[in-house]
Structures are given as structure tokens and as C-alpha cells.
Amino acid sequence: MMDSIKKAFHAKCEADNKGTKYISVVTNPEIWEKVKPVYDILFTKAYKIETVFVEDPGGTCEGREHHTQDASPELPITQSLVSDFLRQLPSKGTVSPMLSAIVPDIFYHGFSTRSGGLSVFSSLSSLNLNFNPKRRDPRVVVQENRYRLSAAGGFDVKRLFVAKAEHGSRVWVVGKDPPDAYDAIVTNSPGVTIAAPGADCIPMLFADPVNQVVGAAHSGWRGTLAGVAAETLRAMAANFGTVPSDVLVVLGPSIGPCCFEVGEDVAEKFSTVQPACVVREEGKEKPTIDLRKVSRLLLEQAGVRPENIDDGTLGTEPTVTLCTACEPGQRFFSYRRDGAEFGTQVGFIGIKGAE
Ligand SMILES: [Zn+2]
Ligand SMILES: [Zn+2]
Image (cartoon, rainbow, N blue to C red; front, top):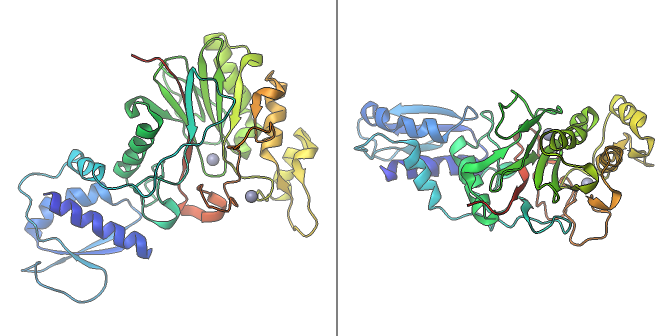
């Protein structure tokens, strides 16, 4: 049984390493019926799986990307067996979330990097934390990566909630009915971990130490203009009595003004909010946007104190506000750099003191 899972996962790793999406499984109909569920769990729609039925799948075969399924499993292969198999595999590197110096000790938080997961394909390697059926990481691998983050971050993965990336400004208050789409989450429950995804967009964390409330928002250019940061503060205030001047905000790894080229139409939109956040440099054809600068302005307008916004300009070292696209160690996932198959990191936060 484990042997069948191992073989299928190995075939996936090989395909991911080579960058191919075609897999030929050499097997027979009887075995295929039993092992097909494992392929359904491990392979997303990003792959093309073809079966080659032979009488003796144990025999050798020549040609393209063939891999053999000849073990005959006795039990049906379930999700939990696949999870168990993944659990014992070694991580690629260690999970070491980056921390902001301004978040008080009553909270736990961090920003994940690419290191420490199981994902193999170049642009997902290795701690991809978001599932998308069109990309190569199946749900079960993303779940395992999230588990590894939780183990390093010291929180319960079963109580982890990750905001969606809809590029809007809606906020979900944990415990209430979630809206269909939400880019931010807030809670005051200790031990509940909330996270904002990002792959150039800003994962933004909020901490109110007075009322003990946390927030996490995914803020790309659309979300920034839609006011997702102010909406998050509003939800913290409306539900838990947060006063914005008490709140600490951290802007995580995200695309910097060095790399965030936009068209004139987008530049125009930002110009009306804050002309200084549109950067025009000699030799660059297109303008770039300083999303962090405009985020700071909008946060300050919403009542957050300037010294309570960690956007890499406070002088605290090391900073978490690095550029996802051009950081020399390529420690982060970046949509701009990697294209459609991009992976996702998160910023997460929670309140200590859960039972
Ligand atoms: Zn985004
Ligand atoms: Zn950059």
C-alpha cells in the first residue's frame, strides 16, 4: 500500500523536477482500479495522466516518463494514508518564520519563507501554502506544508485560518458566518491563528495589545486601493473595541517599488491617492508603485501611529519588509518573478494563552 503511494509520489517528484506534466502509468486494469485514488489525491488538474495497460506491469519498458504500478494494495488508499506518507518525508530546508520586532510578546506571529516544505516544482519549492487546482501542489501537500509551518510556529494547524486572495476588502470575523470572499480575518480568540497569503501582495498583520485582538490582511494593489487595511481596523474596532492608535501593524515580504512596474492606468489610480507612491525612474519604461508607502499613508489616515507601522523604515533589524521579486537569496515566492505557477507564503498571527 505505502509502496503504491511512494511510487506515485516519486513519479510526481520526477515530473516536477523535469517540469513535465505528462505521466504514463504502466499497470493493469485490476491494479489501476485500486491505486487510482492515490493519483486523484496527489495529482491536480495540472497533470496529464495516461495509463498503459500491460499483462505484466513488473516487466521493463522503454520510452517516455513511464512509471510502473505493480504493487497490489489490499486496502483502499485513503487521504489519511497519503498524509501519513507525506508526514515522514524530510523537509527541504528548515521552516524559520521571520519576525517583526514591534509585535508584543503576548502574541505569536511570523512570515514564512520558501524554506522547509515538501513542494518540488521550481516555483512552488518548497513551502507553498496555498492550494489552487490549476497548480501542481495537491491539497494534501499544501496541508502538510501548513502543518510544518504550524510545528515551527508553535500553533495548532487545525485552528489556522488563511484569508483568500480575492483582492477585495471584505473581512471575516472568526466565529461569524464567513463571507464568500474575504481578504482579511480578525479574531480575539487565543490559540486561533489567522494568516494572510502573499506572493508579491503584502501580507499585513495587526496586533492590538490593549484589547488583545489580531488581524491579518492580504493587500495587493487592488486591495490597497479598496481599503482592506482600514476595513480590517474597522472590523477590530466594531467587534472588539479596538482603538486604531493602540494597534501595531507589520507589512510583510512583498513586491517593492524596485520591481512593481505597472501600466499608466494603475499609476493614475495611485497618483490620486498619493502622488509620491508612483516612482518614475530614468531608464525605466514603466512607472513603479510603492505599495508600502501608500499602505502607510492609508494606515495613518485610519488612526495608526506612524511609529507603530513596521514597513522596513523603522530601523528595526532584520526587517521583514523585503522585496519578494528581487531579494537576492530568492527566499520568497513571487508572482512577478515566477509567473502563473507561483507559490504562496503567509504572514500569521495569534494570541498566546490558549488552553
Ligand atoms: Zn494577491
Ligand atoms: Zn525588488
